[in-house]
Image 1: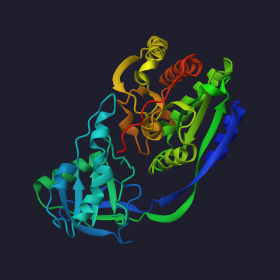
Image 2: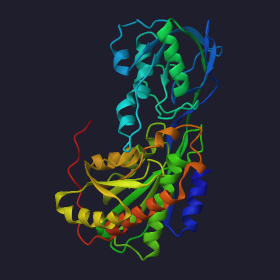
Image 3: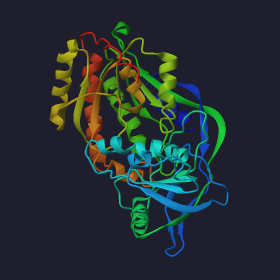
Length: 397
C-alpha cells in the first residue's frame, strides 16, 4: 500500500519515470511481549522485542538476571557463564547534537543478544538505545551470525532499566520474559523511484532520498517519513524552477530498518554507472545545522558554492567527510560524491523506534528549513557546469 501511494503521489507531483524496483526480503513479525520481575519486588516492565530476534517458549522463560554495564563487559564474561540465565546489558548513551552517542553504543543492540547466547543465556534484555526517560521501549534490529538460531531479545524502557539496575545492586533478581516473534518466510518489498529528467544526459544522475519503511511501534513520521518528504519536496522545487542540467533521481528505499535491504538491492541492480552524487535525509525533521562534503579534489569550488548557498540558512561547514547515511552509504563507499546535511539530533533519540514517533513531533518551521537547505543544495549540484567525477572506492570492509 505504501508503495502504491508513493507512486501515485510522485506522479501527481509531476515526476517522470515513476516506478518500483522490487526485491525479496525476510519477514519477521512481532508477537506477545511482556517482562516482569518476580519474587520479593514484583514489577511489570515495559519491553519490546528486537527486530529479527528469536522467541521464548509460548509461556516464557523465568530465570535469574545477570547484569552487565556494557557489551564489552559481556564480551569478557567466561564461556558458558550465563547458562540458564537472562543477560541484561546496559550502556550510557547520552544526548548529542550529531547523534554520535548512538553510533558508539549501537553495538549493544546489534551484537549483545547473540554474544550472550554464545555464553549460554536463555534470553537477553538491553537498556533501550534512547535518551528519553519514559516507559516507552525502543525497538530496532539485532543481528545473528549466519548459521545460528536467533535468540530471544528485547529492549527495556530506560525507566524500567533504571529500576532493574537498582534491584540488581541490592541482590539477585529473577525475571519472567515472554517474547513470541516469528519469521514467516520471504515476501516482496521494493524501492520507489522517480525522476526529474535533466537537459544533459552525459552530465550524470544526482540521487537523493530516504527510506519508506518504519518500525511498527510508531507511525514513522520522524524516521523516516520526514526524510522522504524533505527530499521529494526539494526535488520538486528544483523541477518547478526549470529542468536542471543533471537528472535528479528520488529514491524511497524499502526495508532499511531490518537490514538496509533496499539499498543493497538498488546497488545490485543498478550499480553506480552514471551516478555522480548521492545524499539522503534520515535523521528526523529538526533543522540542518552542518554540512559535510565528500567530493573529488577537483570539485572543491563546487563544495564552496554549495556552502555559500547554505550559509544564509544558519548552516555551518563541517570538517568530517560525508558518509552518506545508511541507504546511500554503499554508493558513497563505491566512490560516488556526497553531501551530508546534518540535522539537529538533540531530541531525535527520545523518539527513535518508539510509539512516540508520530506526526505531532514534527516542527513545521524546522521542516521548512530542511526543505530550503535541500533545495539550495540540489539546485547548485544538479546545475553545476563542471564534471563531478567519482572518487576512488573505499577499501572493502
